[in-house]
Length: 142
Image (cartoon, rainbow, N blue to C red; front, top):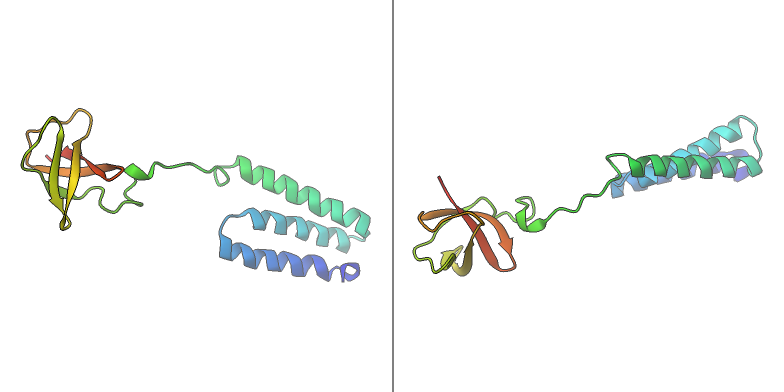
């Protein structure tokens, strides 16, 4: 199958389909290597040239992807991310504070509440800004 070049195109197509399911772009870069191997076959190269060309193109594509903004993985702090914790940004009422800490009813349960740095106890309504374990970190609403 590798002798007639079909191997390169079928494998590239399969990798593109797998990439559509994974969404990481890395399989797409390897598929580019297989496409390069297929092009080398169309140009009349033998297997001893096609495989190194495919490997080299795939390696270069993966390195370029890794160094681009799409390949950089950023670790986000989930305790402050409203995309992870849907309660961030919600408001709650705190009646009594004790040295920057309180207990308040939120979503039908009592939670430990802590003031965010620089916040004061003067307000009645607070917005959730983060989670610290099972403690809600809040800031006064304005």
